[in-house]
Image (cartoon, rainbow, N blue to C red; front, side, top):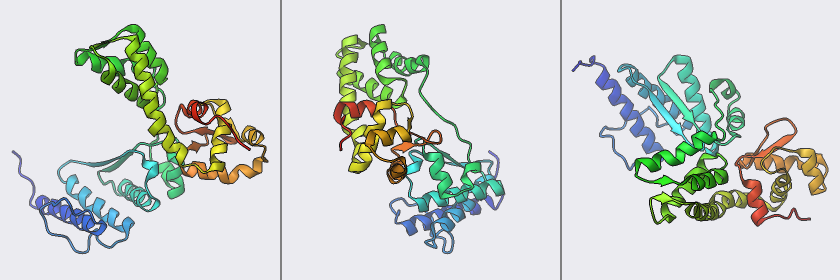
Length: 293
C-alpha cells in the first residue's frame, strides 16, 4: 500500500475540523467527525465565506490524494438565495483556482434563470444539459428491464398503456411503474393491471405532485395558469393569456413574475410562457377548468 506524504493526514484533519466548525455554526451537530473544531475556519457566520473556506480546505486535502469532491443537488432552484449564492461563489473560486470541487445540480426549466439572477456570472460558470422526455424505446426499457430482473413482465398491451399515459416523462413512469407493482396480483402485468395502475398513479399525482404546485399560487395567479391550459403543454403567448383573462398584456407582468419565482412557469422564448412540469393543463382540466371572472 503506498504511503501518503507527511502533510496529507494533517490536511485532511484540518478539512474535517473546518467541516465540523461549519456544522456547528449552522446547527448541524448530530454527526461527529471525530475531530475538534477548527476556530477561524468555516465558522464566521457569513455563509459565502464559510462555504468558500470549507470547499478550499476539503479540496486542498483531496487534491493531494488525486480525489475530487462533488456536491449533487436536486431541485436546485428551491435553494434560498443566500445558500445558492454561496455555492455559486465557491464553484467560481474552484474553477479559477483549479480545485477538485464540482456542483452537479438538477432542477426545473427555470433553474438557469434562477442561477443567473443570483450571480450574473453563473450563466458562463455551468454546463447546462436539458433533459426532456424519454424516447419510446428508452421509456419502454425503463419499465420492462427492471421487471425482468425481478422475474416479472408486461404484456405488450399493458406496457403500451403505461407508456402512453406517462408520455415519456421519467417521474410519471416511476409513479405508474410503482403502482402496477403494488396492484398486480401476478408477475405478468396485464392491460387491466396497467389501466388500474394509471388511474391509481394519476390520483396520487393529482393529490401531491400537481396540487402542491396549484396550492402555491394565489387566486389571480391561478387564473393565469388556467388561461394557459388552452394550449395544453405547449408554450402560451402572453397576448393570448391576456385576452383569455380580459386584461391588457401590460397587466400580466406581476403575475408572470411571481409564477416564475415560484417555479410554476418559465419563459422558453420572448413573449411566451410554459408550465415547468408536463401534465399541468390536463390536471387543471380535471379539477379547475374555469378561468373565472
